[in-house]
Image 1 (tube, one colour):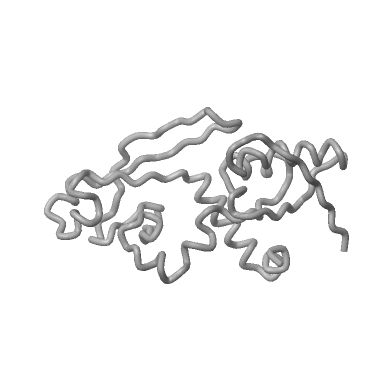
Image 2: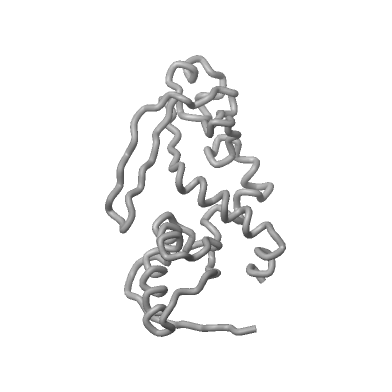
Amino acid sequence: MIIIVNADLFQRLGDPLTYILFMEGYKKYAGELPVYTMADSAYGSYDNYMYCISNGMNIVMKYNMYAKKNTPEFKKKKYNTHNREETEEGYRICPGEQIFNEHLYDRYDESGEYLRITQHYGNKDQCKGCEQAKECCNNKHRIVTRNAVLHEFYAEVEEILSSEFGKELKK
């Protein structure tokens, strides 16, 4: 087994902002990028996944909710949008069993290296009169956001890391 270690120091806030710089430094040193890079969940961001895909690397970095989302404590938080069931089309279902399928608008973010599109969905009419509205959305119109591409990345990471190969990578 070959273990390659690359080290660097960065004056940037947050791990996600250093991954691409780190990989570019590795590429300069080694002459190529690795096919798989394991990193903690702070590195599993949209831009980092896009970088990997754009450079022929597999996305295997955990994302920020990877470990937390399946814990019993987190699952008890039924009003957290991450705990909502989804329809086959990908629309979230609230605890009151209403489907958030009213497309409100898309937000385009070009602040990073890659274009990020976030879809915003609501269900204004069906929240009215719901017994759980106070806890769920403080009697306001609830908006649920979704980045379809990032959602697919998370599914791919889940699939890879739950395989026997992925379990070995995590070790």
